[in-house]
Image (cartoon, rainbow, N blue to C red; front, side, top):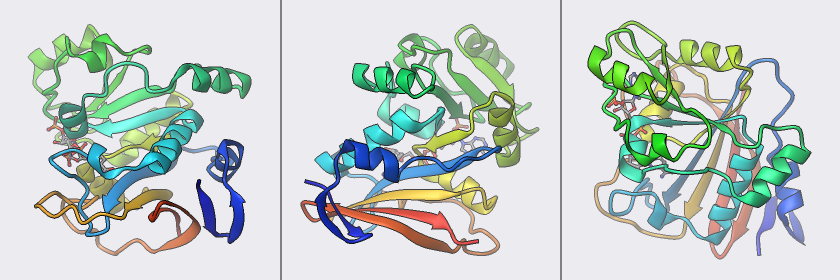
Amino acid sequence: MITSLIPASPEEVDDDALHRLYAYPASDRPFVRFNFVAAADGAATSGGLSAGLGNDGDKRIFAVLRRLADVVLVGAGTIRAEGYGGSLVDDDARSWRAEHGLAEHPAVAVVSGSLNLDPAGSFFSGAPVRPLVLTSASAPADRRAALEDVADVVDCGEDTVGVPAVLAELRRRSLLRVLCEGGPAVLGDFTRSDAVDELCLSISALLAGGDGPRITVGDSPEHAVALTLASLLTEDSALYARYRRAS
Ligand SMILES: NC(=O)c1ccc[n+]([C@@H]2O[C@H](COP(=O)([O-])OP(=O)(O)OC[C@H]3O[C@@H](n4cnc5c(N)ncnc54)[C@H](OP(=O)(O)O)[C@@H]3O)[C@@H](O)[C@H]2O)c1
C-alpha cells in the first residue's frame, strides 16, 4: 500500500490520487519530467539494467507517469540496454487517455548521435506510433536513410543533439507533457541545459553494489540545479520522491 509522507497522510494513495498528484501543470512550453529509480547506495542499475531496482509501487508510479505523458523520451543507450519494444501503455491506460483527451498512445522519441539503432528491432517494428529519432546533422547518412523508413528523423544540432532544439521540436509537435525515462547521459545533458522541471526518483531499499552509473553522468553543469521536494510517498521501505526545480 502506497502512503504519503509529504504531505503526511495515513490514507492509501490509490491510482486516482496518483493521477492528481502527478498531473502535469498547465504549460505552453514543454514541461520536462524525468523518472528514475536508484538503489539506496546511488546505483542506477543492477546487473546492467534498472529493472532489478524497482518494486511494485515503483512500477505503479512508472505506469501512471506514462499514462499522463504526451511523449516518452529516452536516450539511445537505454533503448540498446532495455529494448523498449511494443506499446508503452496497457489497454486500461489507453482507455483512460482517450477519456482524458490524450492521444491513445504517447509519442516516443529517442536521442541518438550515432544512429546506432536497429531499424528492424522491436523499438521500431513494434511501435504503435511512428517513433521520433532526434539526432544531429553529422549523423551517418546510411544509418539515417535506413531509419527514415521506420521513423521521423529530425536534426537537433550540427555535431551533437542540443537540448533547446529537442524542446523546440517537441513544442512544434505539441508534445508538451514530456516524460524522460533516461538514461543517465540524457539527464546529464538536460541538467547542463537547466532544462529539468521535475525529477521523480524512486529510491529502493537496496544496496546494489557494483559499478553501475549514478542517475546522471557526463560533464558537470556550471551550477548545480537546486530542487525542492514536492511530494514523498512510500511503500515497503521504498521512497518515491518528486522534486521540482527550485527557481
Ligand atoms: N535507473 C534508471 O531509472 C535508469 C533509467 C534509464 C536507463 N538506465 C540505465 O542506464 C544505462 C544506459 O545509460 P546511458 O547513459 O548510455 O543511456 P542514455 O542516456 O539512455 O543514452 C546515451 C546515448 O544517448 C545519445 N545521446 C545522449 N545525449 C546526446 C547528445 N547530446 N547528442 C547525441 N547523442 C546523445 C547517445 O546515443 P548514441 O550512442 O546512439 O549516439 C548516447 O550514447 C542502461 O544500463 C540503463 O539500464 C537506468
